[in-house]
Image 1: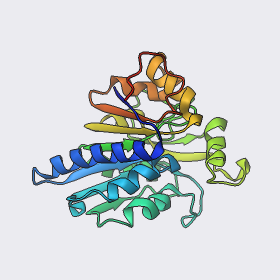
Image 2: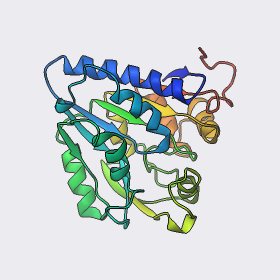
Image 3: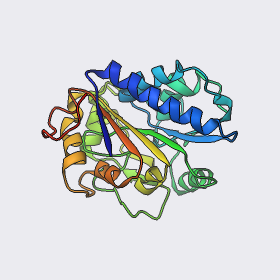
Image 4: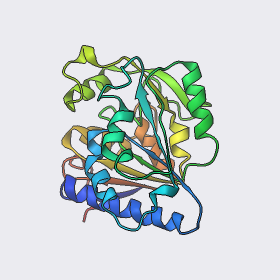
Length: 249
């Protein structure tokens, strides 16, 4: 896993967006379509804004997916991850297609999204790390590095739900749904190239566990170290607890 440590969120977002755009243009140059998956979180906003400003991207040949969604949340709720991505990304560029998980939940919804996701390989994944080390909504109690499923319904742990309040997405903990559909860890790691964007002091402990701790489900993000082409973008705050061996600009 390659580390990039930038001074602040703005520089982090710009650096990540540049690298994503280079990879995207390179794949589009082959003449085919590109399948991309995106995380929905405030931590991704700067990178997505910068990516939309990158020139020379034929968005009409990009098929987009997102990686998790609350269950039993109103379909038009602004906290729904599909709606967040529509506002910040999907509604701002002419994507060839956008595949939404939906807020209904249940085995049939998981199976339907998994079928669409599994139609072809995922080329690029833009993701983050949660304060509990989660990837998508694979919290430590439910993360499975050998999960046979592509998509599953999970119960969110308390730390994950509290993060949604601390991020300003919900006013109180009891407003945060307790269940969600998530793309599994193996499905995320099946992407050919991963761009992991993690700013902020709240993520520092999770980053340290992911980079320097054991590879285990207690920190699901530690699984990123087994991917052959993953870049982790950090700022001064999120990298603050890393040891002296971290690569710095």
